[in-house]
Amino acid sequence: MAMVWYVMRSKPNKEDFFCDQLLAHRLEVFHPRIPVRTVNPRARKVRPYFPGYIFVRLDLEQVSAAVLHWMPGSAGLVCFDAIPASVPEGLIAAIRRRVEEISRAGGEQLQSLKAGDVVIIEGGPFEGHEAIFDTSLSGNERVRVLLKLLRGRQMPVELPTGLIQKKKQRV
Image 1: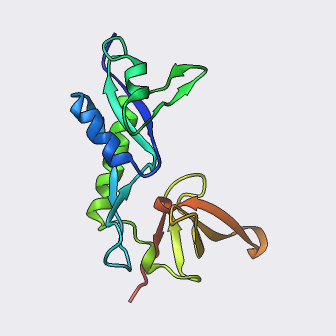
Image 2 (image 1 turned 45 degrees about the vertical axis):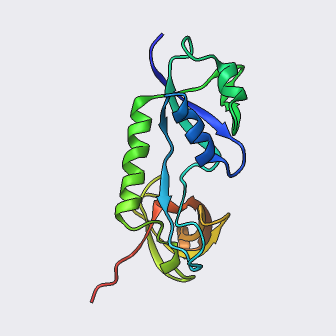
């Protein structure tokens, strides 16, 4: 069998510890983390892009799923119908690119948005549309925007944080 990417679940807030365990077993690991702009100087400045999950590249014929399951910090492989879910190389590459984009931009940029700001939706079915920022939801990972639809009616839409960008004002 070939080397394939899989998704491992970690115990809550143990991603870094579990990542170290996987590396100690000489496994290839991808643990995407992004910088976060914090108000509190003692708060974590980097957080997992997928809290509770780590990507690991391995050959399941060489490394037993049981070894992975019982490793300290592990909550097991992500499986569907008892079959470990593999992740395509292209998706891993896309996640790497997105994490790099966020890092180059200086982290998540929600701190600069306030209710009423005009934003541009940069992905998904509403890509290219303008909306009005309403609020952040669920720990800054999702936002609610108001999208103008037919007859100027505003419809609330929930989106991932990464799909919106503040509209630049013309001077």
